[in-house]
Image (cartoon, rainbow, N blue to C red; front, side):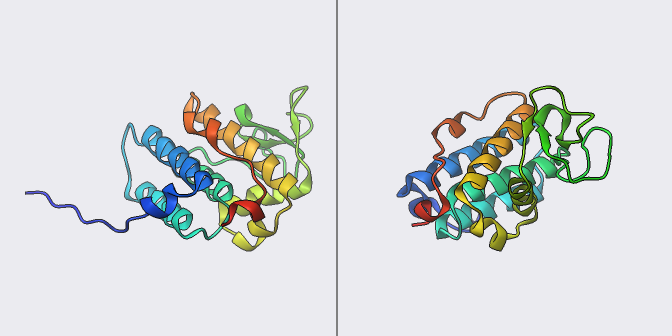
Amino acid sequence: MQQAESLGAYGADIAVHYDRYTAASAMVETADRLNEAEATPQQYLLLVGGLRALARGDHAARSILDSYLLRAMAMSGWAPGLFDCARCGLPGPHSSFVAQLGGMVCRDCAPVGSVRVDGTTADLLQALIAGEWDVVDAAAPAATAASSGLVAAYAQWHLERGIRALEHVLNEPAEESRR
């Protein structure tokens, strides 16, 4: 006989907020894709922690999603390079982000047309993966929107297909989506 015990019921608190619901959908879809080969307890606990934070409204839903995506990718062996050059290892900081090359890259490794990232957005990416919520919560809406786009591009590139639920995730300023 097998038995399961629920660690928490978060659905009701998530479903009544569109931003939380769409973020949760993207997180669950990502977890499903990452765990097609083999699920780990750490990945499960990361997902449960993210869903708990969404249910409580601890932070902006998009920030919770972005932090989850970066951490889940890192747990799966695809940690983005966010300081030193992801291609050649040149010590950073650097100002170009290329998902296909693994994150932030130096001027010599950045292909023409690479996304330029300002220092505030680069710091926010580092705070998202480290769980530095004081930095994340204080970020300007422009930096939050920019980092969200980079995180989405990075995750979808490494998953080798789109995360359908991301199409519905709102890019609201953190103050408006923390209700």
